[in-house]
Structures are given as structure tokens and as C-alpha cells.
Length: 411
Image (tube, rainbow, N blue to C red; front, side, top):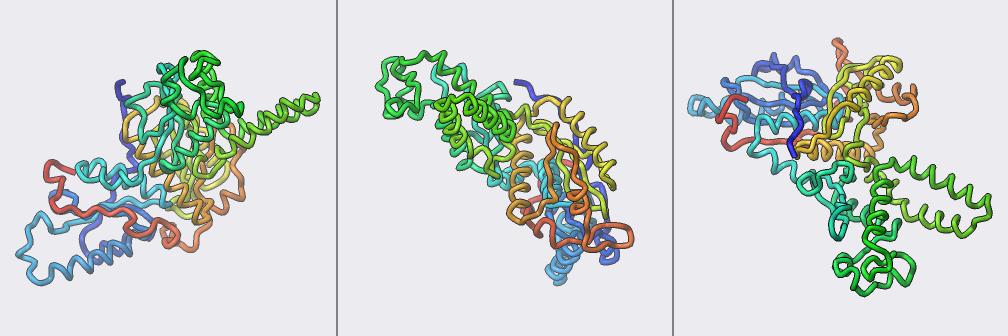
């Protein structure tokens, strides 16, 4: 399966540069962001995220100068910081996304070990396999060609496993794959006796019928939970009104069985090809909202909006762009989803509602949310946000190289 063409994200590059001096560092913004210490040849010595660019670089410079004060002339020039490259961000999520793209480009041999611990998970099932089975994987592109059957992303493998168990319970699927592989001569387990499995293992139903149940589970998982829930509740109401209480009872049981799909840690779960929407978060510019397009593994900056009306225009642009992008099946897409999921979970735990995912068809943007997102605790004269303590924690990502990788080529 060939990789789709990829365009670089200009907003993720460290295009701003200041000299390695106290005066120059004093001009840095006080926003969250990503910075890199570089030598005279442009090789990266350190790459770090921070909640306050000016404070972090200033403190690092003090420590760096103290460590080299004994005999500066004895230091290999390759380790001497010449300047600082940086990119300002408005939120922890944006900082982490910039860091991911920058680390992949500048430090390809070492960044992977850092992002291994942030991997998100998908669940998938090859419905055409001889004996279909739900599995959890960090990135299923290598084993399942159809992105519509990749369901996720999930924050960790435990959430993914719980989601598989939910699908098995809600759609009465086989729980014991080793028995299923004996079909049609297997011995059915207790779930058949409880009426919770159609028992393809012993031939009670054919494998084609069982695949139909798998397809129904995939169709449910691809549907936003709110939409599936609304449809189910309407069917329950109609069955009760028609006095079809047995059907209503079965629907009620199904209602309870799918409830885990509404868990916060599974909030983005759907088919990988359907992960298309708009992300909004605080901007580094005062009283602005930053709008991104999320398109099946790609995240692209649309722009900054200073009014609800301009934000709505950008939201529409973002949805149009997202709808036209092919699915990114590379591991890079999985890494972006991982950063996105961890960013949303961090915001949820902190009670920070300034990061919002807007799906196509969602209600218009709330002016109240816009006002909350654009509120700032202070600003410099140039209109840059100062609420640094509410951003990404200092050094949440930090790579300092033993040997500059970028010696292999320009960074």
C-alpha cells in the first residue's frame, strides 16, 4: 500500500531565530512554544517544549554559561550554542505537535524512543479473514488495508481492550477465538446458553452470518457515539409505543452494552478514514482562536480568528480541506493522533475547555466558548499572550543529544 504524498506543515517549523545573547533572548515571547539550541552550522544541540519561551531560554542560558565558564576555549565548537530557533504556540497541544514534527525532521534517530511511550491504539478486524477477530494495535496499516476498519484512536491499550469487549458484548460476538477456529465442529461455550453468542463455532450460524455481525459492529464503531445513541433511543421509544416490549427490552440491553463508547478516553473513536474535523485552541496572539484542520492523520493550520464570525469561516474552510485529503497510512499519522489524544486528555484532566474538536455537522461555534478561549491573563505591548503558567509544562518534551545527529546533514 503506497504512502500518499505529504506536504510539510510550515507552522511546525522553527523559522524564528534570535542570537545567543541576553539582549536577544529578552525579545522572545512569553507564550508556550518549542525552541532549539543550534551551533554556528545550524546543527541542533537541544530541542525542548516550554510554557514560557523567554523564561525557559533565559534560564537555560544561565546554566549553560555557568557550565562553560571554566575554560570556554576548550569546548569543541560543535557544542557551542550560536543562536536559538523557536516557534511560539498558543496551547500545550500545539507545542507538542510542533515538537513532534520538528523532532522527526531534526533528530530522526532518537525522537522515536520518546514517542513510543505516547503511542495511541486502534482496534481492527479483518472481516474477510477465515475466522475474523478483533485485535488492538498501535498502527494497523501493516495488517489491514481498509482504513474504514481501523477504529480509534484510543488513549492506551487498556481503553482499546475495553472497547473490544464492549463490541463483543453489544453484538454477541465470539469471545474465544481458539474455539471459533474449530468452526463448525467446535464446542460452544456458556455464552451460547446465555443467548449472548450466535455460536458460529458449532455451526449454529454460518460464518457468513457471523461476518454480518462483525460488519454491524464496524458500522457502529464508525458512527459518532451521539448519533448512534440518538438512533437507538428513538427505536426504543417506537418499540415501546407499539407495545413491542421484548424488542424494547433488547434495545435497552444494547443501550447499556454500548455505553463505554461514550467514555472520555474513547471520545474520538471512529473509522480512521472518518477522522476529519477541525481543532480549535488558544492562539499565541491575544484575543484570537487558532483553527486547525484534522484530516485522517494530517493536522494543518488554517489561521487565527479574532471574532466568532471569522472563526466560523475558518471552520468551514477546515472542513472543506479535511474532506478532500486522502488517509495518511504512515506511522507519522499514528504519532499525531497520539499527541492529539494525550493533549485532549491533559486538557480534560485540567478542566481546560479551550481545546475543542468540531466535527462536520456540529452546531455553530458558541460565543461563550470563544470568549473563554480568547480570554488572557495579560499581554505584552505587541499583543502576545502572557498566561504562560496555563500552557505546556516546561520540558514536557526535551532531547539533548550526546552527539548532534544533524552532523549527518543540515537541520
